[in-house]
Image (cartoon, rainbow, N blue to C red; front, side):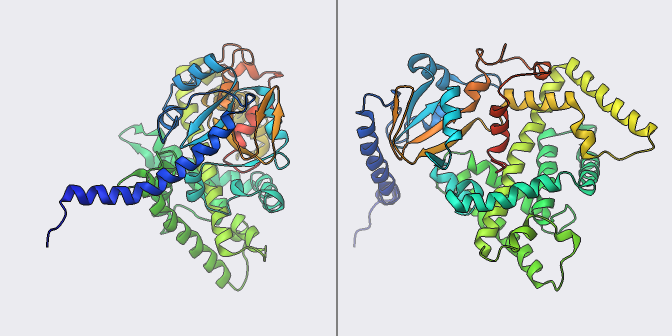
Length: 429
């Protein structure tokens, strides 16, 4: 009996794995071709075979730049153009009016539509994946919960205690690795209010490692091959769900509810219609959203303030003045009101979010045919509202590449755009 050569076996295996993907891409390409035939559909590049413009669109870029892909296509096609991602023609909008129109008509003309590989990781029941009444119902639980816990005095004290402890433990020979610190800090702050998790819990370190793997996989190429970062993230997801499910089961086994159970997990458990899968997906998405955005923003603040000492000194003065005032009044601990009264600190955060673009774009799908400003967007088309292109637009922000917190003093700038950037992964929309 003659056995095929190893190379032949590899070709057969590759064909079995890749053929379904190719078939899906070809089917999407045929649909997208019909879109392109409409003269009102925005023009744009087709990119490479199969993958389209995936690698160009996701290519890392300098902090204050849109990157080569966006700059070239904005110059060639204007503020609204189309691109091909894995056979699907999508509309990319750097137009302020179209972006606002898309967001104002969410749930009426557009709905959430993250890429399929992100959907597979986040889960079916995470808030960002829901639409209609189901979305509104869960949002009505999460948003009031966020507004409530961030004003709790004990939670503000917990954040202060956590920051001091992590700063001390992260100090390695006089050096603090900001990315590592920011990830740990953000994770334990959000996980505490999501499911009562603290650094002292035995499963905390492993869950943090799984979340880091999960985070990297979300922003990696969606290649589900052994050893790929996306494959590792897919393996990390069930570990995260298992840890959340364990917390859920422990709560159910309790005879009474204590103060430590006053978290998002406790709020979701009160909803009798929610399955354990629904609750676990919601907690996973909530923690990821908070960690992904907050940790990145913290790193950017460190980087930007180091390069702009005048802003650092102004913020330090504000903090020292706050502590001096509290000491004179016989107070020691910071409160949420103290934080809200730090105006320049708020300006630093707003400017960091603008120039850093922690959440650079929103993904929406048209639920009906839409015509706007001479463009035709067919039903089922994904619209990528590119917020970074607006935040770095010189017609909206003077010297957009410059870090300037003072631009927010008595500002009339489009705060709704900054707000949307902050909310996309925090599920507060």
